[in-house]
Image (cartoon, rainbow, N blue to C red; front, top):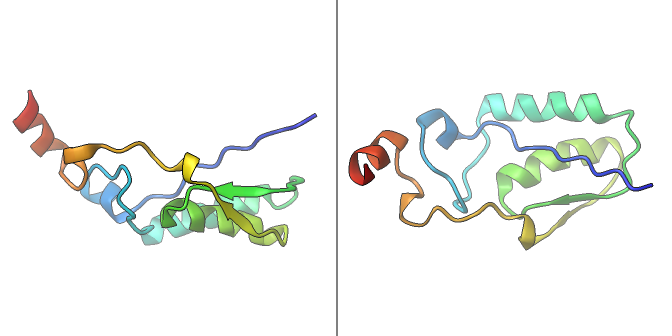
Length: 101
Protein backbone atom coordinates (compact mmCIF):
# COMPACT_ATOMS: atom_id res chain seq x y z
CA UNK A 1 0.00 0.00 0.00
CA UNK A 2 1.22 3.49 -0.82
CA UNK A 3 0.79 6.19 1.79
CA UNK A 4 1.27 9.83 0.85
CA UNK A 5 2.08 12.38 3.53
CA UNK A 6 1.45 16.00 2.61
CA UNK A 7 3.40 18.59 4.56
CA UNK A 8 2.67 22.26 4.13
CA UNK A 9 5.50 24.75 4.31
CA UNK A 10 6.05 26.81 7.42
CA UNK A 11 5.18 30.45 7.86
CA UNK A 12 6.91 32.87 5.49
CA UNK A 13 7.83 36.51 5.81
CA UNK A 14 4.99 37.37 3.43
CA UNK A 15 2.51 35.36 5.54
CA UNK A 16 3.39 37.68 8.40
CA UNK A 17 2.91 40.74 6.20
CA UNK A 18 -0.38 39.48 4.76
CA UNK A 19 0.90 39.41 1.18
CA UNK A 20 -0.24 36.99 -1.51
CA UNK A 21 2.70 34.74 -2.42
CA UNK A 22 1.65 32.44 -5.22
CA UNK A 23 4.75 31.54 -7.18
CA UNK A 24 6.98 34.20 -5.65
CA UNK A 25 9.85 32.51 -3.84
CA UNK A 26 9.50 33.95 -0.35
CA UNK A 27 11.65 32.73 2.55
CA UNK A 28 10.55 31.04 5.71
CA UNK A 29 10.30 33.24 8.78
CA UNK A 30 11.99 32.20 12.03
CA UNK A 31 8.63 30.82 13.14
CA UNK A 32 8.37 28.96 9.82
CA UNK A 33 11.74 27.29 10.41
CA UNK A 34 10.59 26.27 13.88
CA UNK A 35 7.33 24.90 12.47
CA UNK A 36 9.34 22.91 9.94
CA UNK A 37 11.62 21.50 12.63
CA UNK A 38 8.61 20.48 14.75
CA UNK A 39 6.92 18.79 11.77
CA UNK A 40 10.16 16.98 10.93
CA UNK A 41 10.52 15.77 14.49
CA UNK A 42 6.93 14.50 14.47
CA UNK A 43 7.71 12.51 11.30
CA UNK A 44 11.12 11.19 12.32
CA UNK A 45 9.81 7.72 13.26
CA UNK A 46 7.36 7.50 10.36
CA UNK A 47 8.71 5.36 7.51
CA UNK A 48 9.40 7.60 4.52
CA UNK A 49 10.88 6.31 1.27
CA UNK A 50 10.83 9.43 -0.90
CA UNK A 51 10.66 13.18 -0.41
CA UNK A 52 9.32 15.39 -3.18
CA UNK A 53 8.83 19.14 -3.00
CA UNK A 54 7.88 22.18 -4.95
CA UNK A 55 11.02 23.99 -6.13
CA UNK A 56 10.02 27.07 -4.11
CA UNK A 57 12.42 27.47 -1.18
CA UNK A 58 9.71 27.67 1.49
CA UNK A 59 8.45 24.23 0.50
CA UNK A 60 11.83 22.73 -0.28
CA UNK A 61 13.39 23.77 3.03
CA UNK A 62 10.39 22.53 5.04
CA UNK A 63 10.56 19.18 3.22
CA UNK A 64 14.34 18.97 3.62
CA UNK A 65 14.06 19.22 7.39
CA UNK A 66 11.90 16.08 7.45
CA UNK A 67 13.91 14.27 4.76
CA UNK A 68 17.15 14.78 6.69
CA UNK A 69 15.89 12.51 9.49
CA UNK A 70 15.56 9.75 6.89
CA UNK A 71 18.78 10.54 5.02
CA UNK A 72 16.77 11.18 1.86
CA UNK A 73 17.42 13.64 -0.91
CA UNK A 74 14.56 15.99 -1.75
CA UNK A 75 13.45 15.81 -5.35
CA UNK A 76 11.98 18.99 -6.81
CA UNK A 77 8.88 18.70 -8.97
CA UNK A 78 7.57 21.77 -10.81
CA UNK A 79 4.06 20.29 -10.77
CA UNK A 80 3.91 20.95 -7.03
CA UNK A 81 4.52 24.69 -7.44
CA UNK A 82 1.76 26.82 -5.96
CA UNK A 83 -0.78 28.39 -8.28
CA UNK A 84 -0.02 31.81 -9.64
CA UNK A 85 -1.95 34.73 -8.21
CA UNK A 86 -0.95 36.89 -11.17
CA UNK A 87 -1.15 40.61 -10.45
CA UNK A 88 -2.03 39.88 -6.82
CA UNK A 89 1.38 38.41 -5.97
CA UNK A 90 3.23 40.56 -3.47
CA UNK A 91 0.19 42.69 -2.68
CA UNK A 92 -1.40 42.93 0.76
CA UNK A 93 -4.81 41.30 1.13
CA UNK A 94 -6.41 44.60 2.17
CA UNK A 95 -5.05 46.30 -0.96
CA UNK A 96 -6.57 43.59 -3.14
CA UNK A 97 -9.91 43.99 -1.39
CA UNK A 98 -9.80 47.76 -1.95
CA UNK A 99 -8.89 47.42 -5.62
CA UNK A 100 -11.11 44.57 -6.68
CA UNK A 101 -14.32 44.71 -4.62
